[in-house]
Amino acid sequence: MPRRLSTPQLIVFGFLALMVLGTVLLKLPVSTERGISWVDAMFVSVSAGSVTGLSTVDFPTTFTTFGAVVVMVLVQLGGLGIMTVTTMAVLFVGQRLGFRDLIAVRESIESVDSPRNTLRLLLQIARITFAVELLAAAALSVAFIRQGMGFGEGIFQGAFHAIMGFCNAGLVNLDAGSFIPYAGNWLVVGTLALAIVLGGLGFPVLVDLYRYRKDRRLTVHSRLVLITSAVLLLIGVVSVVAMEWSNPGTLGGQSWSTRLAMSVFQGVTARTAGFYTVNYPEMRDPTLLVQTLLMFVGTAPTSTGGGIKVTTLALVVLIVVAQVRGQDRITLFWRTLPRPLIARALSVLALASLLVLLSTLALMISDGLTLLPALFEVTSAFGTVGLSLDVTPNLSTFGKILVSAVMFLGRVGPITFVVALAARQRTPRYRYPEEEIAIG
Image (cartoon, rainbow, N blue to C red; front, top):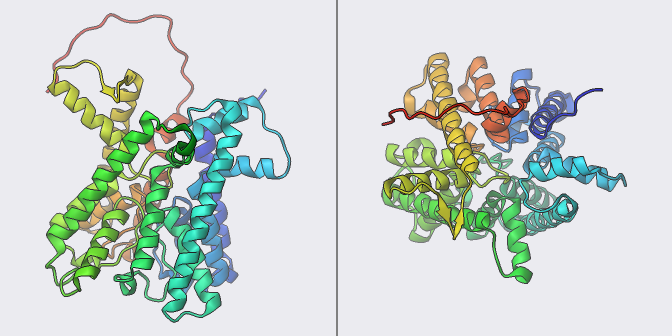
């Protein structure tokens, strides 16, 4: 009897299948104006499926409306998650799910609800997702039409970028190739920023906030995500204001309100979305370093973004604080965190750091890049952000494949990928004696 795939294996193979299908569809003649190579089709498909936003081609001039719709679907499916979308499809056609299937779905979205409540949770996720995207699409459509777009074009671009915003994918289908012309348009940047923030909080937090009207309480996870996200957002905005306010290549020369809008927008997008209203190659190195660190952290678990996740960062900080205080337990909001959770956080940090460092080294060797551009590109891919210092279009074939692999690993998570490949281990019935070793 064939062995059932584990939840990590379903996630990894599901995303792989999505990206392979996307590659084939984007290679079709109907998808592009003048045709693209298989490598470029693969790169854009992985970028869309992993909700990253990096592109080796000029998106608005390369892809037809059909190609743009394919990318929209890839981003939507990649943003919601393979298990979530598959379950919704099964329910839509009237099929029933077994108890094991419900457990797998619950694990994929890291829900603490019982398996029987998973279906209700998925419905709430669907309502929240499409409500946010619909409202964002309406606001963006109004803004684009006011800017001179035709009615049909404005509606399409509004829907396209609403999905990109909530799913935290940085692909832009505008003629300008970016949101720089809309830097001072608060309706555009405000709508996108709000959609990005909501998408980056993660579905468990969004559902928790949705239920807050009735329950009047938030889980420890939700409180930690909200507090850490707010702190990182503040760091992002303040760093841009402090280091770029007088830079003539970025904020300098703009009006006060435009500078503020640009600073807030880049503070939001740095961790996940990849949209930009400033010229990134003109940014000062200290700002780029802060942005790189924010990209490495990313968003919340089970969100539409990547990175090591805000909860991992928060746990590492709590571990350090506990060590400094001489405490052997990690407590948060009057709760004690289990030791396996602490070990997992440290494992995620270690694996992610190793992946980023080795990939940066490989990209420096293969493409002749200096440290900061290579590190920025790789971290953007791992965090599924989509920002670049104009490196992506000039990548070698090896560089494109490498960055694609990093985007994929950033979306599924390094721990999930390793667990999916590892053989199942039985828990031993014995334990060896403990012995201390020197550390630090």
